[in-house]
Image (cartoon, rainbow over all chains, first blue to last red):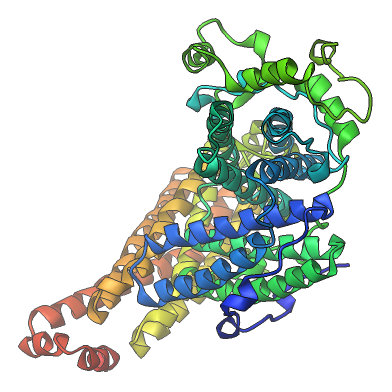
Amino acid sequence: MAFNPLEHRGVPLDQQLRNWSELNVEPYSKDVDPYTRCRVITLNGIEVESILFSHQFARHTDDPDLKRFLAMTRRAEQQQQRAVNWLIPGDETTLEVTAGYEQVAIDLTAWIARSEPDPYLRQAYEFGVLEDFDHLYRYCNLLEIVEGRSAEHIIGRCTEVMPGRPTIDQHRHPHDDVRRHYDKHTVDPRSRLHALTVMSAEQQTMNFYMTIGNRYTEPLARALYAEIAMIEEQHVTHYESLIDPLETWFEQLVMHEYNECYMYWSFMQEETDPRIKAIWELHLNMEVEQLHLACDQLRRYEGKDPEEFLPKELPEPIRFQENKTWLRTTIAEQLDLTTLGTEFVRREQLPVDAPYYAYQERVNAGGVPSEQVIEEHRLDKGGEYRLETEGPHPVKELRAES
Amino acid sequence: MTTHIVTKDKGGKIKPIGMESAEPQCQMAEDQLKGFAAGADSLNGPFFADLLSAFLAHEQAGFHLYQVIAKRTQNPMLARHYREFGKETEDHIRILAGLITHLGGDPMYVSPAARMTEMVGSKLLEIGLLAGSADIMTLELTMLEAVILAETKDHANWSFLSMLAQDLPDSEATRAIQAAVAQVEPQEDNHLSWAKDTWNQLAKAQTQSRAAQKIAESAEKAVGKVKDLFQ
């Protein structure tokens, strides 16, 4: 069903404000469809990015009309963020929410990689997803150690749990996380939306881990969050560098609003929970109006017509779905990839003086939490936690020890 | 239809260098550029293609600038000129795109130089971001200064083409360049001289008028004064 948000009007901005009761939504229950949880987590990341972007933009202008416009729309986005993020119940532990975050990272990035038309950008998503895949494995083992539960009650059986590119190997020199970017004149509209979406999701994951990782008392839990949060920083650097810095403040403002329309529209279509679907629909109607207002700002301050660069309709909706076969193939083919500068290379192709080695030696000295958590689980439970629904691990060296 | 913004669906192409990436079908190969302006002997086709791409990006940036300031100015006479120059600039986009095509190039090609030009142009548009700390007269003068800066480069671009056409031996390509210059250069001359003269008048009026000093102290009166300028 084609949808062009530019052809519709939404809820007038001054009618978008809600009261505290309306924002303090009823959370979902923990037995919610895992992909409903994934949609909630994703949209929280999207809203947080829109807020942070708006704040950055506001710091670069003193035009009162513009600052007030940004403040007003940002207030609406903040309310949307509350309504979305407050769907997550208080009885979901931090590690359970974390498992949800990693499931998002895996199945969202996998879908995007499979839909991405640009080969270099696609490689960037394929590269990143194998790392998040490993994070889920490490966190699920921690969950069993700390809380005595398997993650299956959170992630269902939609996403397998087994090693990806080992986290210990993911620690790269900062220079090796900077990628090449698309060019705004040749970029496919889908590519633009993909980059913004995955960047937002990884950014929120980074924020989440770097903030709540210290809430556990168990040293291993604290250590694992500290380690994986740093990989998420790497991922944010990696994904944000895909975006063309030639895009102006106002073009980015329009793209943020457009992407929010795209995300709510996508998720509204496949949401199984009717109450939550109604929230996606309401927020879509809010974002449509915010998009129109952002387009007005672009016309006013840059004399550009957004219809000259926005597509005539939204692309195919983003879906949460299983990607097991694709992930297994990607793991088998790309596990040993790393990066050298902006490019992806096999580990064996790294020169002996590559910055990677010195960085690895420095940060991994004294023990690596992501390895320790598996050793601990083996000692504690006589083996490691995995959820391999499609057979043994595609890489022989990473099959579970007996 | 005149293209103000190049996009993939309009056939946008780049020559990715350094930190850029593009899908293979959106990449302009060096071979494709080598044949540019082949009819005009001994030209460096790829360089000239990149240069004209930058000139086109400059016209597009100029068009957007005029769109903004025509609506932003409080003075009807200035608004009228900005609208008129904006329309003429739109014609220049069309003429330059036509010239590029005629010379065997692709007006949807955005060269590295064009990207740089677009960046410079975007900075001129950012004057609006600081409007909160500018009185109305400062804003009007700054908008005029933006026009002077944009038109100075524009003028330089077309002067270059004029000079180049004079240096080249006679050929169909040379005549195409000369025809484009003949259409555009007089208007560019007019845009620049008008902008400079108008800025001079405005700045002189402000500098030499004690009355203007008092009016500047009252924002409402300043708006009225700006509206009445050039009456």
